[in-house]
Length: 305
Image (cartoon, rainbow, N blue to C red; front, side):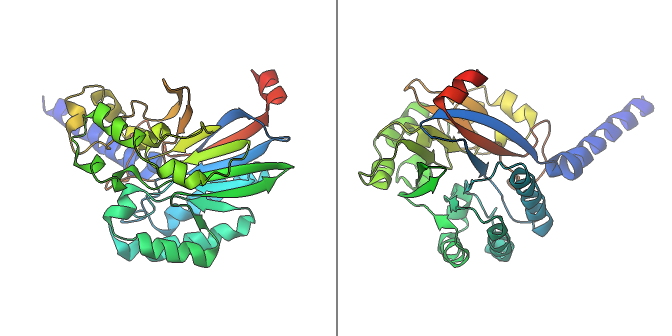
């Protein structure tokens, strides 16, 4: 019996070490291919959920930059898209983000960003806005930016976080229909389009519920927020509506934790697992990731399929 107890303790200690010291530091690159009206392939790197904070500082930033460098060397880095949640909980880690914004200039490509719910909760949005402007990162808050690459115009549309909607954050976490209805009544996306629509539109929203914002259908919607559950058991437990009401789980009506899906409204959504961890940096069978999205001309996309 004593041996069994020791073995169980040793197993859980090993699990904690693996989760906190190993898996959480192994950022993967996931490749997605999207059919669009571009003339030549265009490569986007989507990075979200940084959560700079305790245990996630300059070393964490360096691992992200290393993977972006790999994409650059492979010729797969035309635009960098930052999906929010830059700061975990404390404004004292803003200097880490400042150094990251400065370092990201080395890639010489357009960089756009949106704000996440943790940035709102930490009350650091004005500071992030100032840093982004200083280092040439275009922060999109219900705004869009047109980027010309390879003979094609890409419209990058960034919206505010869904928790800025007055009633959204007040709803219980399992009120999925109500959350979706609130988003569907918002003008975040239509305001950002401002009547100017390119043939290829990338909608960037921290919360996956942004896919339900009304307006012209984008080519693809990119979102983060979920961390893919961060720990595999969380994804299992979240299948229970009751457990989705718990405050430990992210708020939203989405039922996809990471990956790609087509909604019942016909929109395509890619949800990234993020590169950091909220409060706890550990991960279990849900490695952090950067999503490399390649926009392909229709002929190339059909050939690949």
